[in-house]
Picture 1 (cartoon, one colour):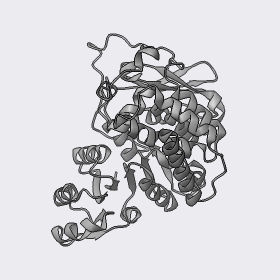
Picture 2 (spheres, rainbow, N blue to C red):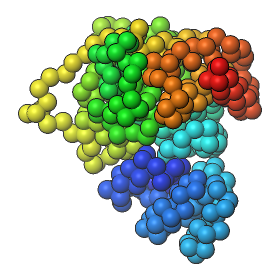
Picture 3 (cartoon, rainbow, N blue to C red):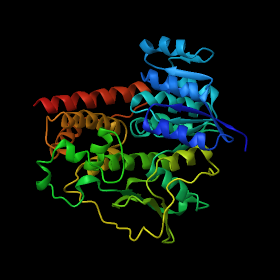
Picture 4 (spheres, rainbow, N blue to C red):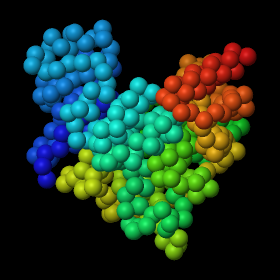
Length: 380
C-alpha cells in the first residue's frame, strides 16, 4: 500500500490526537500532511514540529502569525478547507458547524472523508447528500455506532434490499434504570459521570438524556438511507457491541470491540482495507456477559424528540441540535434541572417552522432560529 496523506481537522481535540496516535503506529502506511485547529496555537505548533506537515491551518487569525513564526518552512493559513488540497483522507474531528466546510470540500474533491463531525449530517444532510455521488468521494463514519453499522453492511452483497433494520446500541449513560421522578434533583457532576466513555461535557450530558443517541438515529438515516421505522435503539451497558444490522433473512450481524475510538479512526484511515494495529481487542477470559434492554422512553424523552425531528426532516434536525446545545449549556451552568432539558426542547420544537434547506445559509438560519427559540423558552 502506498503511503496515504492524512489531513486532520481539529487536531488538538480528542479525535485529532487519537488520529495522530494511529498514524504514528503505522508510519510506513500513513503520513500527516495537514493539521487544523481553531485557536490551540501551542498544541498545533508542538504537533507540527513532531509530524512535519506541509500545511497548518489556524482559523483564529489572532493566533495565525504566532504559529507561522514558530513554524518556518510550513505553509500556515486560516481557511479550514485548505487541508483537503494536500490529503488523500481527511479526518473531520471539528466540533459544531465550523466543520461543515471540511465535509463539503472533501467530498467535492472526491476524497475519503472520515467523519466525526455530527452537525455535517444531522443539520446539513440535505446539502451534503448530493456530494456523496462525486467520483472518488467516500464518507466513512468515525464514531463507534455508525462505524459498526458500516462494517456490518459489508456482509451483504445488496444492502439496499437486504437490510431489515439497523440497531444502534446505547450505554444508557449514568442514569440507566432510574425513574424520571428520581432524576429531578440530580447534579451536573452526577450527569457527567459516564460509565464507559470519556467525552466532553456537552456530549456526556447528551448521553445522559439519550439525545446523543437520538442524534445518531438521524445521522444513521442520512448515512445509510434507511427509514426511521427501520432504526431501533437498544441499551447495552457494556459498550462492547457497538451496533448491529438485522437482515431480511433474520440474521443479525454485530460489530464488537472494547470501547476505543482509535478503532473507528483506523477503519476510516485504512478503508477499504483494515489497518494492522489492533485497538479494542476483547479478552474473552474476562468478558463474561453482555446485557441488552429497551430504552425507557418515558424517562429519556429526548430520544423520541430526535425521532420526531428526523421524521419531520428539512430544517427540523438543525433546529433541534442547536436548541439542545443552548439548553444543555444552561443545565451545565446550573440554570435548570436535568428533567427540564426535554421539556424545554419540546417547547422549542413545537414553535419551530420546518422548511426545506437548499443552501448552507438555510441550515445556518435554522440553527440560529433554534438557538433563539431556546433562549426565549429559557427566559420564560
